[in-house]
Image (cartoon, rainbow, N blue to C red; front, side, top):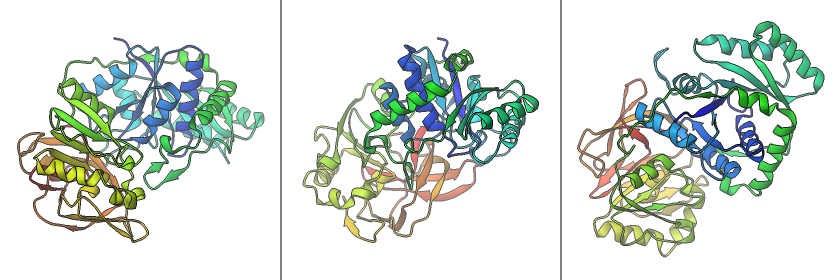
Length: 440
């Protein structure tokens, strides 16, 4: 299957990639194109915004954390039944894992190189003109094989500003086309919090936001010229094992504003392997299906709802009942915090949690911990024997203020440097701050 696509990249975060991606997806869909979405890197939040524009969430593309077969399968899923895939990049074009120069760093550039998809830059050009053109030209020459074919200028002051940039770009890099120029639009602002954008499901009127973004892009970007740049992927999908082995045969998955950071490719992999997946909402004080033999608590923002979760009558008692009958329970990042004894919120208030792991966590005075990780199981679990390896990442502000007993994972960073062991395990209950993306 030939999957045509484009990669939207930028010189840095905050350039307007998500706005441009949403506007393009919705505007092209309105023209009758069947558009697929993808997000480069270990991001949970942007794919939900893509779903608001297209009616389906984007897939994750991560060349560092995914095996080649998993990456190729993700590209194929993004393009299945679609005319075009728009892949939104992560941070700046060349930003990725801390690995030796030239190694696969999981950057947007690396994904563009492996897929063969052309790159369209989104550039915030406030306060610059010829220099903005020089930045685009420099990025285009930085690494052979990365095909930067166009640029969408963002926050343009007016026609004269655009003309100045176009003249300079024609001199610096005549092969890069200016595909459009978006004016500053204060109404199209996406608020952020400590782990990135505020979630799509929390946006007060996301449908109206997407409509406005689509109108802006349709009125200021040459869509025909942009679509003509798309190229087929050079990746070929083959059968591969699930990214993460299923926790059980019947898996109950927490899903709401507090537990939203589950990778769709992991859930789909469980289903492909024959597992039956059900969902429940802890914020609605729903407990897991008591017939499930496994429970998965993904990451999210439980710290924002700690008092509500602690006060519920069904959720935490339901977890305890599942543990008592031997169900495999796994908490990832925020889910790990909930499985512990207590969670202290950013205001310093401590709330009792499930008490299934000898861990206490706190958001008070925490500092950001982030980066790619390789993890190996210390002991056998539902995912495999001791030593079984996984790739993923950590991204949290919370800290462990107390942890006892055996660790779950032996961890190392992207460059292979050893890190302190992570997570905890008691019987069939386990958790850690590490987000699993694929088997190593």
